[in-house]
Length: 280
Image 1 (cartoon, rainbow, N blue to C red):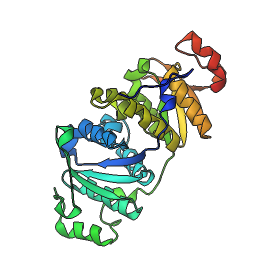
Image 2: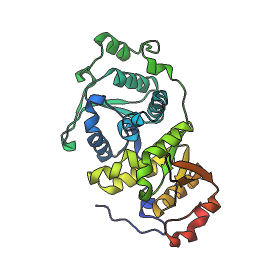
Image 3: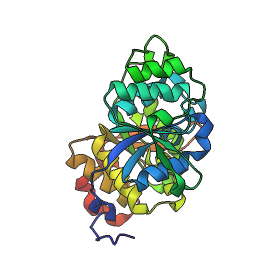
Image 4: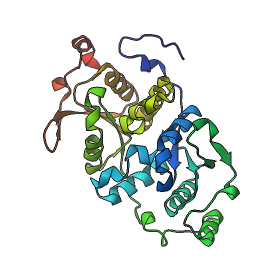
């Protein structure tokens, strides 16, 4: 395990290596392997942008599915690469098409319940799940598919936002993502992407590095609830990168509500963090 140098805010500030963002594309048939897919991607020194982790299964239909489609399409465009795991369904086919259209490298893998048994394969060895061979040939030849698949009708893009909140508010994770999407922001939600630190399948430092990379790459950071040392570190990185930062108070209830507040009203989880208020 990496030995971390202590800082005045949080140890994660020392983990600044630049990792590429990789969109994980796989069929709902392999939904049960979503944690292993994210863990494998992390262990390859990449940041997994895993839609079935980030939105679970369409956020349990809490938001319009069209918003999830816009979000996933946008995340493909913002990622550096697309990795395909398992069979190619029609949804995966569209994601490959979008990646190729945006000149993103595409790689193919056979997943496994054991993350050490993943195997990279050649594109021609990929298996089609419910896709006609002629459509697959169209994708490979670069022909346009916009008129063929409804998901390709969603050409909008929304800004990407990093929802920063402490483990004390872990149970609000899906509500926070729903709030962001309804505000036309696409969340890359750390507690959903790496829940809860992927059960410690990978070293925690990998997750900290991934989070720091996401903060750097996204358009905004929204902080929810009381600020912990970890959230403060993420806010510091966001400000250093010139990102817009907003703060929201969590108002418990049914449904939970979030109200934007100015930095002077932000509360810290620990009194000793008050000396760092200038970082807000």
